[in-house]
Length: 253
Image (cartoon, rainbow, N blue to C red; front, side, top):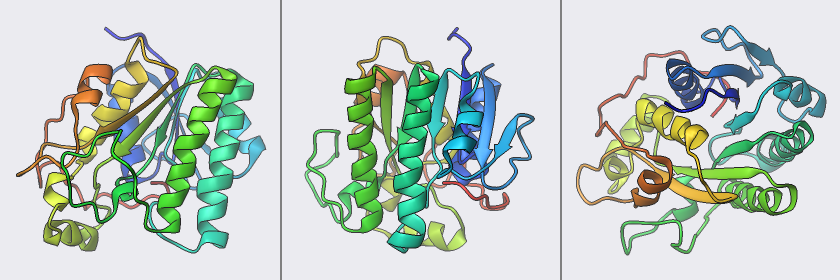
């Protein structure tokens, strides 16, 4: 059985945040949520602003691991949304982790690093990226910043490049109509299992990048072998299994 961790989950009221928090709790970890709105499913939760250093320092106190999900989850205005939430918030989180001497930070990247990629498949962590918008560029920064903090400050950093998690019915319809969407689908349950595996995995290098998605309907879009080998991640769902669009929307990713 994996050692129990004290895990801060930022963006804990969001689609992925709720699934990750639930999976970590089910595995016996202590979970503290952090979001700009309450996280009703968690007894221990901080309401705060991801761009506020004081709020994050308060949230990381007593934690040994952080799963950083809080962000604007798609293309949006850079100055008013992407900059404070995805750039400043990332800096504040990594600085809080450094100051609190956390053991590990798990960062969420994006499949939009490969927007428009048609081959060869499956995409793996060594595949050259091709970001197409400012949101994707914030995720390029996320990965680079994680690498810097791993090399410079001794953090163990795991970057997860997730598949497509539908946030509402329109988003799910877009996935279903996409030529590759069903093969890159990530169910909430598999998202929870993937991030929990990143928290629990032992013997990792200082900096690790893996893809996490559910089982493909046809041709695998992402190479899950690194996640399986390094984290012990095993997907269980296949589109549209595990899809829950009736849950209330949250503020995080």
